[in-house]
Image 1: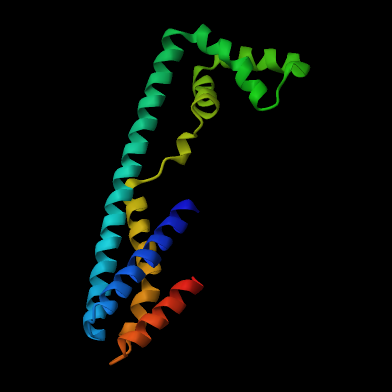
Image 2 (image 1 turned 90 degrees about the horizontal axis):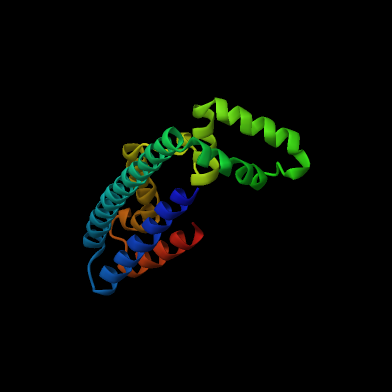
Amino acid sequence: MRDIILGVNDGLVSTFLLVAGVAGGGMNSTDILLTAIAGSVAGAVSMCAGEYGATKSQNEVIHGEIELETKHIRKHKMDELSKVTNLLELIGITGKNQDLQEWLVRHYARDSDALLKLMIALELGFLEEEQRSPTMAGFVSFFLFLIGAFPSVIPFMVPDIDPTHGIIASAILTSFI
């Protein structure tokens, strides 16, 4: 949801401001349209590249953290197991449920894969399944930016629209989205 709001909002604001700036500079409606399209594509490419890089970096950090946690479990399993009780209390399995706590600690002591998943989720704060494809994230940001840019471009697609009327229409369309 955050990515949707960011992508669309960025397209809305930056394209409208570009259109308003060039319209205020006295450009004719055809030149405004070409500038709006070029700005929309440039902004979408920028969003695509930025989101690709950010998602790829985030995934690399997650992989690094998982590798480190895997080494900790392999080399210092007892230390990692000592954290389990506190982590279980974070999710509501408290001292009142002592038998359940003890059973879970024994379970995680026997199953290193389950212990790793627990530590990733509760200690590191993410799930392996939450990782996104950098390519998909980039393309989604690209198209979301274009969707947001569209309201500022539409009015200037009307042949021979007066730039003042075009900017008013852009402002109205942009404000409704």
